[in-house]
Image (cartoon, rainbow, N blue to C red; front, top):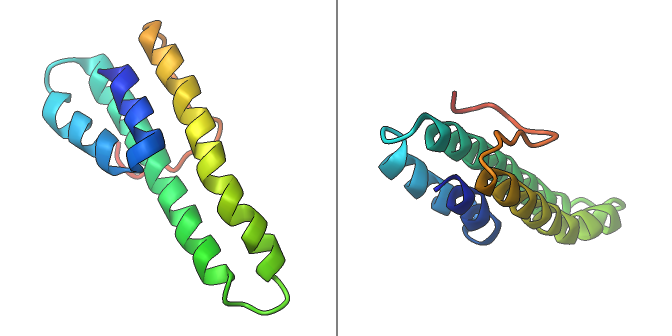
Length: 103
């Protein structure tokens, strides 16, 4: 289930990890930990994407946010896949940058 929490995040943003974490958090400490990690990361990705969308409305920096608006989901997907692979091995995965909103 840790694998699924990470991989769903790459495609459903924060909704997939949230559902997995809410349903399975009491069954396994590993799934609880990895579900929270994936959920926190996907919340960060969602916030970053919204900031990029808002930044697109600011003159003179639109090109920076235009590049970032494409990079954010790609980076999120890559790290979600890496997290899924590590979770599948049973290794506790920590994203290189993450907000720990849910602890």
